[in-house]
Image 1: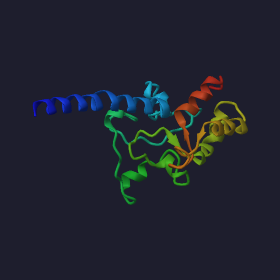
Image 2: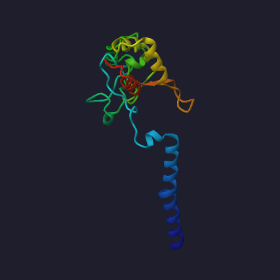
Image 3: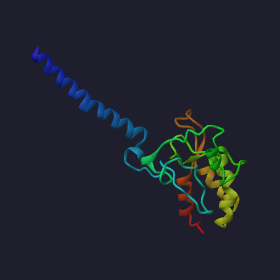
Image 4: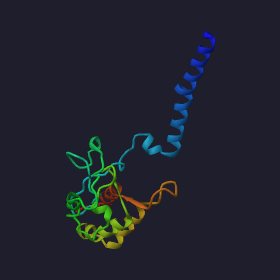
Length: 170
C-alpha cells in the first residue's frame, strides 16, 4: 500500500509538475509567442487625448484610465445617466465603441468603422492625406481571432505607435 502511494505520488508529480507545464508552455509559445514572452505592448488600452492620435474606447477603470489593477465593467444599463456621460467626446452619432467602455475597461481595440470615423481628424492634425491614414488603418486591422472568433478590430495603441514611427506626429 505504501509502495502504491509512492508510485502515485511520483506519477502525479511528473504529470502535474513537469509534463503539463511543458505542454502549456509549448502551446503558448506556438500560439501566442509574443504574449508568452512578455511583449505586452498593445494588450491594454491607453488614454490618447491629443488630437493627432486615434482615441481608444473609454476606460471604465477607477482612479485613472486604463488602470489594470482596477479592471471592471461599468454595468450601466441603457437608461443610466452616467452611461450618457461617456458620449461627450464624440456625440451620439459616433460608433458605439467610441462612446462606451468595453467589459474590462482596458480594451485597446476599436472597430475599423470607429477608426475611419476618426481618420479625417488624425490626418488633419498630422498633415497627412486621409488616404494615407486609412491605409495605416487597413494595415493595422486584425481579423477575427483564429479566423472565427469576434469581429475585425484595430489596435489603437499599435496604430498610434505606427503613426509616430512614420515621423508623422505634429
